[in-house]
Amino acid sequence: MSYYFTILSPTDVPLFNIAFGTSKGGGDGIARFRFPDTAQYMNQFIIHSSLDILEEAQWTNGGMYLKHIDTYPPAAAYITAFLTPSGARFLLLHQPPQLPASSSGTGSGLGSSSLLGTAGSTTRASSSSVAANPTSPQTEEAVRQFMNEVYESYVKTAMSPFYKQGMEIRSPVFRTRVTAAGKKWL
Amino acid sequence: MATPLRQSTMLSVNNSATPQSASSDKSQSPQTQTLSQPTPGLRVPSNRKTIYDRHLNRSRNAELSRASFAFLFGEMITYAQRRVTGIQDLEKRLNEQGYPLGLRLLDLLFYRTTSTSSSALSSSSTSSSPPNRPLRILTLLHLIHGPLWRLLFGRSADALEHSVSPDTPNEYMITDNDPLVNTYISVPREMSMLNCAAFVAGIIEGVCDGCGFETKVSAHNQPSEMWPSRTVFLVRFGESVMEREKVLERAGVK
Image (tube, rainbow over all chains, first blue to last red; front, side):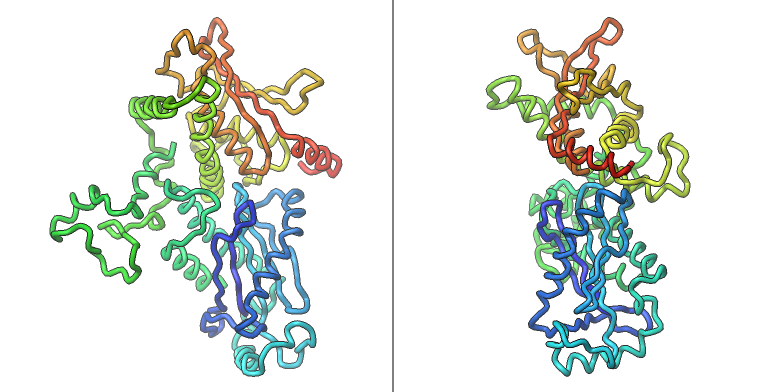
C-alpha cells in the first residue's frame, strides 16, 4: 500500500505533499507506486483531478471528513478527502499493492518490471493489513484518525502569526508529525 | 482571543535574539544554534517546545486581561490611522486586520469542539451537536452569533435578524448591544461615523469567507437609549452565495 498525501489551499495552491508507504503488516513505510519513478507526477495528476468531485461533495455533506470520494481505476488509486472549516483540502491517494495477476494494460502497465517485482514481494506481507482493502470501514476509520491528527498539526500551523493562509508549509516539524501520523494509522 | 497561543509561537523569528539571550546565558553568542538540530535555519526555543508540542486547548478557559486588550486595540487603531484618507479607509484597514483572525478562529473553533465533544459540557455551547461545516446561510450565522461570539467575548451576540426589505434578501444583521472592543473608545465628534468594531466585522468576514460564503461585513452605530454603543454588523452575502443557497434549498440540504 502506497500513499500520497497533499494539502491544497482554498484557491488550489499546493501547500504540502508527502509520499509514504504503509507501516502496517511489516511494511517498511516506503512508497512503491505503480508508476515508474520518473512518472511520479501521475499521483498529483490523479489527486488533483478529484477536486471537481470534492467541490460537489463539499456542499452536500457537512462533515469535515468526506471519506472516499473518487477512484481512478486504471491505476487503482483511491482518493479520500478531508475539508477543514476554513477551506483547506486534505487529500489522500492510496494505492493498494499490485497483485501479480491483475496487472492491467492501461496506464500502470508502464511500470518498470523491477518496480513491479518489489511491489509484488510486499503483497503477501500487507494483504492482511487494514490497508489492503481501501474502501472497507476499517480503512476509512484509520484514515479518519490520520486526518484528524494532521488537522491538529495544521491548526497549530495556522495559528502561528507568521503563517498566512495559502503559504506553503515548510516546517520540518510538521513533516515529521505527518509522517508519524502515517506510521501510526496507515 | 488566542493571545496566549501567539506568544508561544516565536520560533521562527530571525535573529532578534531578545527572547533567547535572556534564557541562554550559558552560550556566549545567541546567534549560534544552541541545539543540535540538523536543519539549518530552524530555530527551536531553548525549552525545545515548538508550537507543535503545545496543546491547543491549553488556553481554552484562560481569560485575557481586558486592560491589556484595550491597550493593544488602541495601538492597532493608532497604527491603522496613519496615512488614511478618511473614515471609510480607516474602517477598511481595521477590517483587514480582523480578517486573518477570522480564518484562524474558524479552524480553532472547530478543533476545540471536535476534540472536546466527548466531554462537551462546561463552556462549549447549547448546540453541542457534532460540528458540521456550515453549508447554509442560517447555520453559518448561528455559528457566528453563538459559538464564535462566545469564543471571543464570552457571551452570545444579542440579536440576529434578516433584512425585511424585499430588495435586499441577501442582508442579515447581527447586533451587539455593547461591543467589548468599543468599551474604552470614545470617538471624536468629527468622526462620529466611525465604528471601531469594524475590526470585529473583519473577523466575521474572515469566518464567512473561510466557510466559502463571499461576504461584505460592515459595522454601524445604532445607539438606543439603553445601549448607547449598540452596534449592528451588516452582513451582505454575494450573488454566488444566494444562488447556491437556492440550489441547496431545493436539494433539501440543511
